[in-house]
Each structure stands twice: as C-alpha cells, then as structure tokens.
Length: 473
Image (cartoon, rainbow, N blue to C red; front, side, top):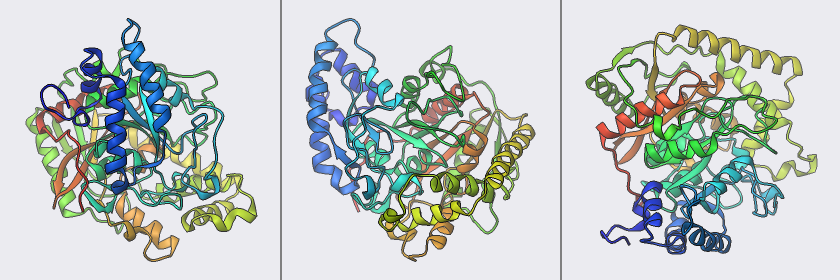
C-alpha cells in the first residue's frame, strides 16, 4: 500500500513507475504484491496459463539494483504479462493448445525483447484460445478467461487472459495481439483501453509472420497514457520486416497528450453484415460517445456502414488458409478443439488462386472504402454488437458452424480494421446492466498518434474508472 493509502495494484503503470523511481516501494515489493493477487484473484478470472513467479522475483531484484542508477528504463520494475501466443525463450508457450502443452521456445519474439528492455517484468503467460482463433477465450489447457465484471461471462478473445489480468489488477498493462479484433474485443468485455496499431507498426519477428497483413501486437491497459507508452515500447521496426513502418518521430505518449483539434468524424452503429443487430444497450453507449464528441467541438456525421458484406467471406478464406497451413500431423488432429478443426478443414478446401484473389479483394475493397472516407479524420462505431456473453453461449450448440455464426453476432465491427490495416482503439465508454461496453475509434493508416490524442480527450471528458475490478459473479 502507498503512503496515501492506495493499494499498489490500483495504480496504472505510470503510477507504479513513479513510486519505484522515488524509491517509495521496491520492485520486489511491487512484484510480490501482484503475484499474491495472482494467487488470490487469478483463478476466478482464468488470466494465466503459466505463472513465472521465481523468474519475476529474480528480475525484480535486478530491477531494484538498476533503479539506483541513471540509466534505468521508464518502466523498470513494473509488472506485466505476455500473451501465450507469443514466443518467450525458456518459458512454456502453449498457444492455448494441449498439443503444445509442454512447448518451451528457445527464442523471444521481438516484442518480448522490447518489453524486457523497457524494464517491464512479466509475471507469466496470459490465457488465449487455441491458436488465437476465436473471439472468446477457452481452451483445453486451463479453460476459460472471465471478465472480472461478471465471472460467469467470457473475457473475450483472443487476448482474453491479458484483458482479465489488467482489469482485475493482476498487472497494470499487458501485451496482446489482434488479427480480427483480438485486443479490442477483450478490452470491451473487460472495461479497458485496447489498441490495434497501423499494419506494420509493430514487428512480428523474429519467428512470427504477418503474411496476411491482418495481425499485430499491441497494448491493453486501464489508461490511455499506459497504452500509448506501451505502444512506444513496441513500435520499433526490425531487420527483415516485410511491412516497414518507421518509429514515430514524436513518441506516442507525447502525441497522446496533444490537443486533437477539431475533427470531422464519421459515425455508424449498424454492422456491415446483414441479419446482425446492435444491442440497444450497446447502441445507447455509442450514442452517448457520439454526443460527447459533439460537445467537445467535433463534427460528427452519421453515415451508413461503408464496408460491404462481401468482405467477410474473403476474410474467411485468408483466415482459414493460415490455419490450414499450420504443420500439425494428421494423427494429432483429434486433439484439436472443434473450432480449430473447423477452420483447418475449411482452409484446406481453398486453392492458391482463391487465396490470392481473396487477399487482392480485401486490399482493393478496403482501399476504396478508405478513399470514400478521406474527408473524415476518425471513425466511431461500437466495438462489439453485444455485451459480454456467458461462457457457454459460444459453444453450447456443439456445432462449429453455429459457433462461428454466434461470433459474427458478437463481433461484426472489428475485423474490417484488420482487413484495411488501419489503427483502431476500443475505449470503455460506458456500461449496460452492470457490464462494460466499449466504443471503437478508428482512423487512417499511420494516424495512431492522432487517434490516441482523441482517446485521451474522451478519457478526460468521460472520466471512466481506471481502478481494477474485484472479480464477482
């Protein structure tokens, strides 16, 4: 507890780093406090697949020695977590699959190395669905991840464990990844800020590949300033990157504090897919965000959803082809979850020509949409069409086709930003019947900093809660 009576886990990463720099608390004390909370609170939300307590405490001892020097990095000694899809040298990385339950990589992903260089200390690997394929988090390794707002409901996916950990105060911020909404979906379900950067902003190397252009690593945090600072940690191009986006000339943390100016914002609340409706409670929170933007002086123009429904089947060609290419022996197929087998079988039916055509369609169609939106600085939509859903809702039918349909009912807004390669952020702009509801802001490629400045302005005006949620049913 701090001298002001605040529990350590109630502070965001900036607040914790400030205490460490002032030597009001040691990193060992800070990490121990969070590990105790992981032990006590973690099981209720299913946040972690693997907890690396001994390694974290050893890193904390090293951090304490470094904090006494002038070259300590900005987040030296602050706890975090790494998604279990992300390669970590010497630490079990299951990718949410019992096939890989004992896999221990011998190399760190670049993002892991950058997180360590920033002084952040990982407490372990956060929960994720098998191979990150679904918009909810459940697997055969440790089971579900729950939103601490209501532990009977799922934290969302595929970065559900990371979001649950941040929301419940197990760590102040965490690393996620997003190939169709996998940072923003759990951010909405857990009442957090979640950022999907511009395509190529964050390197997938050295062992990862963004061959499809859909996925990116990014931050989950309780405050915009934490999210912006973590994006600064991650946004460093690496040798061999196929999609090169230089590090920003001005740090995102600084850009996030700038006045965004008067913006012209396109707003829509209807999904791009026919037969899917936005929940009235979600629409109410979106409308409140729209009205707040207008009160802040921005011009908000309601438009029809500009993304055509024809994108979705072509996205599925790309998504399923990637899963079909995974080198899984035929004899191991029965060990996979039904959702994984569904996507592998679907992808195996696609030809190379169909995959190439699908990727061209996504690029050309989203380019046309963004050309039509060139007169707008930002876009406002709901993050999800529904509030957080009960765990069984996604899988209770036992039919992967029906499961996929329900995922589309749940999250028909996020994947178009992955198809287009543009930045997007989910913000915790309200609640409905006690459940968090996220609102999503997007912008054109490269305008991550402008988006974070607008997010900071909304954060200050809406004054959403930034303290952890103690899990409850």
